[in-house]
Amino acid sequence: MNFELDYIEKLVKMVSDSDLTELTLEDNEQAIVIRKEKEIVQAQVVPQAITAAPVAQMPAAAPAAAEEKKEEAPKGKPITSPMVGTFYMAASPGAKPFVEVGQTVSTGQVVCIIEAMKLMNEIESEVSGKVTQICVKDGEAVEYGQVLMYVE
View 1: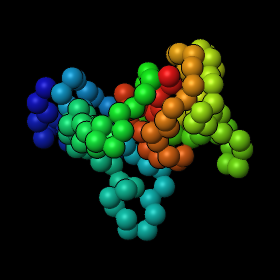
View 2: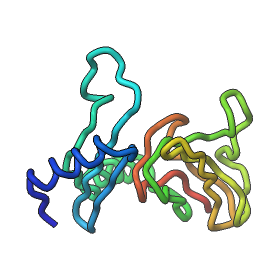
View 3: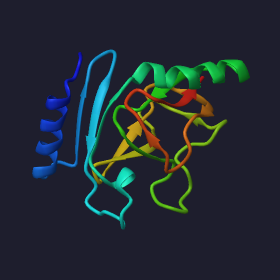
């Protein structure tokens, strides 16, 4: 899917003129994410403005995966993010994390929260076993399909 500049500009205008805060278009090779933040802090345009950029999803994740393999091959089955958002280990700041490395989880157990568009989405484990690695830090932005943790 090749996105033309005129098409992207129309999408940015549509998001800007509407109540939408995020629009994502993707295929197997690339994606476009257009985000609008309601608060603009001073003149910091880059993090707060509407952004539109073709994002190659696979190449961005590949270098991180290659580095992990050099250090230590992850053990277990991955739990991946079903959406773009912010990863949280606990229900609230200062609360006990849902899971920690070495803890046993069961299928259907909540393992983290991903905040997307001001909604808190509980992510449940699809497998039972022991958490061997947590790949994301609390409060970090995550992408669709990004590995959050491994369960063995």
